[in-house]
Image 1 (cartoon, one colour):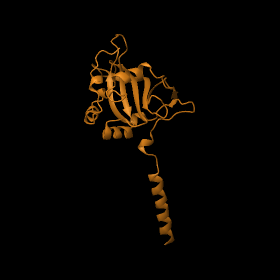
Image 2: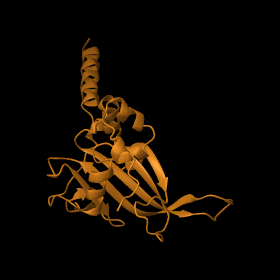
Image 3: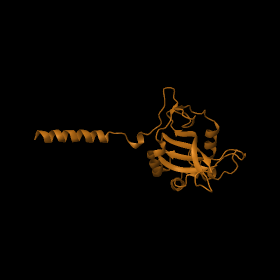
Length: 195
């Protein structure tokens, strides 16, 4: 009888430890002692929202065409599907990659290559008075300081993002969700003359 009780006790302890383990929503923004954002780890395991190629919000020619891959935490994505709004501590990672057209067996089109930048957008009113903040990580940097409110990113998102501060107009799977909940701003989505 004693071995059975010991086994049952051990099983119960293991079960408690498993249920108390980390949850998907524990993937929230982490800051250092100075309030700088820590580089998000394993963001490529998050929900992939969309990719762009050669997108520019400026009519000026001459910028290098790159790929932008957008990821968000899976728990934030699940919350958005329920309400059409992004929960506090939602974090978007924009993985900017160089583009090549000639290499290996490729004859036409473009493919992604080296990392060019890592940009992050966060909804976190506990850390940012304006609720939304933008960070740009230097190559191999472990932390990034929030860009000042009113910077180009913040201003553009404030004026042109279809849902809160996010460009859901470029996320084809989320656009109908936002419309269903009445969270989609058609006026902002249709702006053509961006300065």
